[in-house]
Amino acid sequence: MRRKIPPLQTLVCFDAAARHESYTRAAQELSLTQSAVSRQIGTLESFLGVALFRRTRHGVALTASGAAYARQITKRLEAMERDTLDAMSHQGEGGSLALAAVPTFATRWLIPRLPAFAEMRPDVVVHIETRTRPFLFADAEFDAALYAGTPAQVANWAGTRALLLLHEDVVPLCSPKLLPRGKPVAPAAIARLPLLQQSTRPDIWRQWFDAQQVDAPGARGGPRYELFSMLATGAAHGLGVTLMPTMLVADELARGELVVACARPLAGERNYYLVTPDRGDPPPLLELFAGWLLGQAQASMRR
Image 1 (cartoon, rainbow, N blue to C red):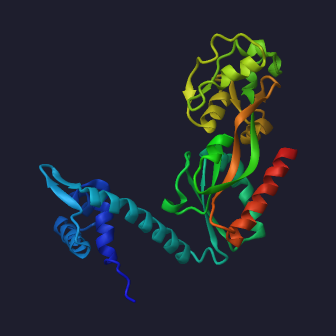
Image 2 (tube, rainbow, N blue to C red):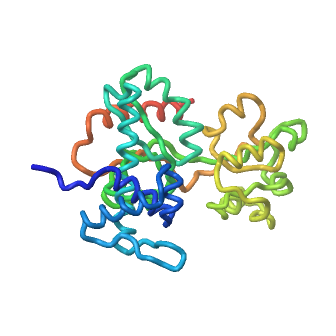
Image 3 (cartoon, rainbow, N blue to C red):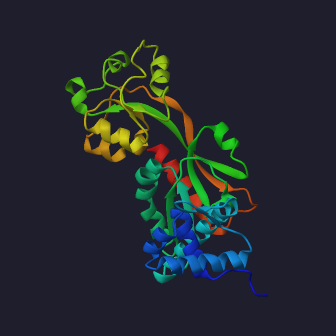
């Protein structure tokens, strides 16, 4: 049976016009004339029987139907592009995995370990994109997600199952230049040093000082950074002390750019999970990757 799919060129023009909400800018992106883009959009609207844009004083704007269609079409075109690039590069003969991952964990923990997976399965391609919040797998082109969250957050992620990989214990870290003789200090001394804050966890220092039974009026003071990678860089350059997991700064610790400022870890509220859609038995390749990943996590904990 013939598929009910409009011509691909109409979809490409629609995607560009929807992103810019401008036929002119879409034409510039696609190296077409404005009238050519307009004709393609007209063809698509006739095919669908739906108005995708409405005219405004300043050009065009998406209708409600157009905005909903654009969200779906953009994802489909991106998936087609990924599949095409895989085919062009002769990759993925053993399959591919598309992962969503929190950024610092991906760059500092996962990617350095992927050569071991590639050695085991050189025919498999692993794609990674960053995501920091839960999403619907039905609306995304991901096979799994590497997520940092609390047990409650994971339990409330609808339609998924989660495999616990690592606990996120945090410890004060800083440049050795901030410490007397570069040696660890007592918790009370940390309260007198500049503190680097993580913007998504504004109470983490307060929790650490409370656990040490230390009065620290400035526990919420200091510059705020969003990502662990930013905190690590700031701390390594002497801007202050950060609270973060040592597993994410193994290279900086090995090079001596960071040291443990106080050997009093705090059990973090969040853990790292492999989250997969709950659709019965996982595909064999995903099951293989999950087993390998869990082994890497267990080895990391032992070290």
